Image (tube, rainbow, N blue to C red; front, side, top):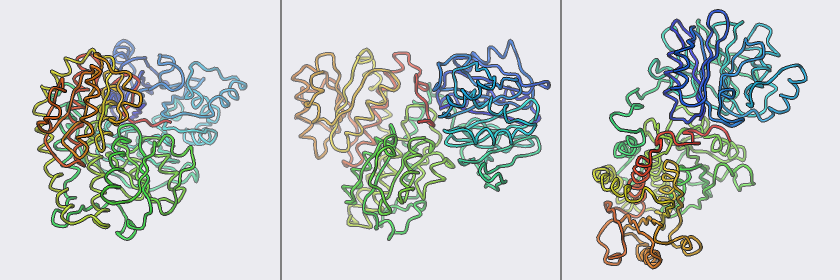
Length: 609
């Protein structure tokens, strides 16, 4: 969610900071601000709303200097307005702080500071940090930050500058991502590499409990607990700026939907062994014997990733015959899950930074489980802390509503399933059949995308609907959940996904001539069952939109609208079925005038609980 950018070097800082903030807009935010050392002190300019409003303010009140920090805020403490926007200043005006995360003991710290004479100008927890750093400051900024953070409970990614200890940025991390970018005689701080990719590909990722001190002469990484300098590996970013541009598409979301033939192929590239009917996954860090020794598998995730996990559950149980439980990461550590050294815990997160998923993984590790991460962002926290994993190689996903990451996550789960199943009882013939079907997927997705205009016309028909119901069976039930989530995320139309048979256990009461019902009804092993559900909807005058795969006499006269997708095996159908549902959500939202790439109240990477 919130974004951080910092700069130290010979160039004027403000344009670089604004450029970085714009690269972070996709993460979701409600206000923005900058703080720059102007030669005589720290000057702060901030504004509620979009970065364009901050730019307009800076045009009338420019700030000049070569060291600065900037922030985009997503409100947690206090409403989104100018006084709550970051950066926040210490009472003496010498220290500026930007902060991602939540200070859980902010209220008690605030009461303590108020007794010492500090006055608070905002409703945020972050302002506590600014005053705490002032309280402990004796001329050395990093020492003051360490002392202040020792009093803090909660999560944070922070960047701090001081008018006294000049031309220096101190950054620290606990539970919220931060990195140092290494340029030519200049250095950057950022919460996301996209903010600084135009200027450097060399980065150092901070881990929890680490602090970076960056000045004109270089950088140091310090262990906050031991207060000793660490020597960390410099990582190179292997994707380029063009990948985070729209490339002629109206929105990032549409671009990412249309990238799926390539991203699905990228996830599979070099990993399919057709002759052996299995997959090659070098990053699992598990021997075949270790993989076979697990008694059960737990998959934990949030949102769209949770839907891909449900598909993974079906794949693993059907093909590998291993018991699987899918858990909401946000609930996992607040109960007493049955996890031990015989459990494999798979965590799924596009960003690799999702706070709930990261916490769930750490809890599973604490209980003795081995952990695998399925992530998109190389160098992310989950990627670094998991025992092993699978990168989905989908490239940067900028649109808040995940599309290409979902289909690539399903492919990654199938790659894992293939390996495990072939080690167990899956036949060579069946393995080869699955791989053959997987190889055909990119071309089949392209066939769907070539007919996107049909979905756009459908969106025109249903853009004024107040509610949608999405129904599917088997592997297509999670696809129905995902289709409903996409629609509500970006169009703000209420939508629910259900197993088709569950419709008559409640949702059927809602169906009338005003209710569009989307059925995922390809010719699969449960087609006859879903046909009866279609008849139930039509008997109540519901409007039926069906995703089908062939002419079906049983559906003749039952469908108001039909979209045909290529035929494939049951286990691959969710990948194809999800594409027209993504397009439907996109086109409805566009026709309603929604901000598709930055839907209200949502953030791309949820880094607080």
